[in-house]
Length: 324
Image (cartoon, rainbow, N blue to C red; front, side, top):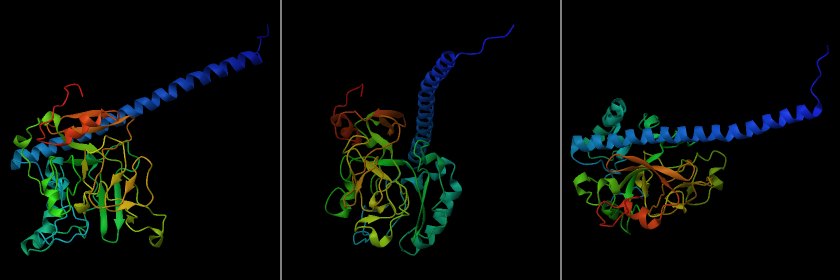
C-alpha cells in the first residue's frame, strides 16, 4: 500500500513551526552568552579588586591612581620629573604578573636613580596583555595600540578618581586633591574611607575605542588623535586608567585629552583638558563596578545621579540608600 506524501500545507506548517522554534531559541542563546560574558567580566574585576587589596595589605595603602599629575602637556614644573606608571603597574605582582612588574622596575630603576623621568614609552613590554584586566563583552578588548612612541596595552578596568574632574582645577597639582580612592599620587588607606568601603567606588568598566587606522594624520582635527587614550595604562598622565562618577554609567560624553577621531557611538568623547570619563560597558543596561570593600556588583544605567555620584567619594558624608 502506497504511503501518502506530505501535502504542501503540511510542509508549510512544519516549516513555520521550525521557524518559530528557531526564533525562540536564538534570543535565548544570545541572552545566555551575554550573561556568561557579564559573569566572566565580573570574575576578572573581582581578581583586580583582590589585587588592589593585596597591595593595601602589603603596603598599608591602595596604589596611586597615577604616579604623576594629570597633565597632558607632560611638563613638570611642580615635580621636575615624569613617572608613567599607574595603579595597574603596582598590582601586577598580585595578578600573577611578577615577571612583567620586575621588567618594568628594571627598566625604570636606572632613570629613577639618576633623577631622570621614569618614562615607559620605550619599554618593550608595554604591549603585554594582562587578561585579568579585560572584559569579554568588549569586541575591541584587549587593545594594543601602536604609536610612534611605542606599543601600549589598554584594558577595560579603570580606577575611581572621585566625583570631580580628573585634573580637579586649573593647576595640574590639583589632580592630587581628588576625593576618590585612586587618583594622581594617591595613597589612600581603607581607614580613610569613612563613607564605608561598601558604599565607595574603586573600579568600573570602560569601553575601548579601537585605533583609527583609516584617517590620514593630516586630516585628523586638532585635539583628536589616531589613538584613544581611555583605558591606556601607559602614558597615564591624561587620565586614561581612571574614571569619575560625575555622570551615571553609559551616559553623556567623555572628556579627555586625546580622543580618537573615529569614535564609537557607545563611547563618545570630546578632546579637552580636565578629564571626565564615565563608567561604560557593552553589557545590556548597565556595567560591572568594584567597590572599595573588594565586592563586585552590576549597576543599571537607570541608577539615580543623586545615588551614583556620591559613591565616587571616600569621605563625603552622603547618605546612600541601602537598596541601591
